[in-house]
Image (tube, rainbow, N blue to C red):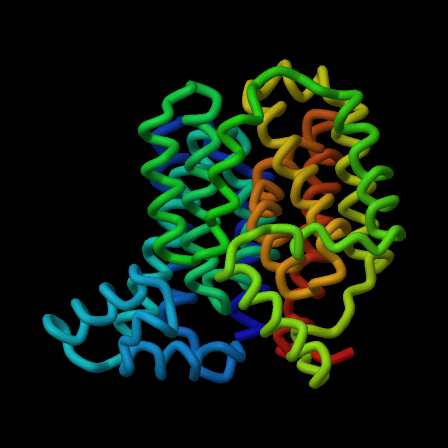
Length: 342
């Protein structure tokens, strides 16, 4: 699998450097590369990710109390019409996740292939090959960006609700409607220092939410933390990956007007990226929640990071910077899923 991922990654890099000029050929190539990703994720081995066995269990149990309704409905349909082989589940989720993210990429940026490089190196491994429910939910979050810009409430609610049916954490998509499309550079500039202040103060904002379901989840996570569960270990808000993302955020903010001249969705994307970083800090006292929400909002990485391309000349140099970031993401994620060991 490592060989396949590296081979496909460098194929994506090669294509991003030597693009065909005709848009029709770009579209065909983009479609083919998306199909390759679907095949890799859908037919992956069970040893690739830690959640594979859990999904097989959920697929056979079809318990609405265990997982979200969309997963159960899809599982029931597969069992009824295709059989009890769980491979159908993984292929279908890979198809939905990759397809909707690909549609969103084409809607939100002209840098299709650089976005594919970042997507493959980061969220493809994290989502389509591991957290398949969150992967589909994050795709719907990306699809919400255009309706927010167009002020199309019906389409926004449709995508947000669909995301929620695949992963309950997607409920946090709903407040994004109020972001607006105007630039708020000063607010973005000071948001992370404020978030660090909240982190150091030790304030737990989640415990103030008067909703019993959320409070029950909090109690469960606190129990897991006390038991030393791997996913509930306290997070390090000064880890190199997170600090690197902060550097990227402030660099993009410094080039805000330039990037905006190329992409009208920049204000919304930057605000969502900022929320992603802030959530990691503000919710750090509850690591599982902080990580989930951070990763959900961070899906805009695949659109924003390639914007670095606009900030440098010549073209080969600007693309090389994006590719370098992609390589770093790829190595980190392969280490995280234990496909490589340092």
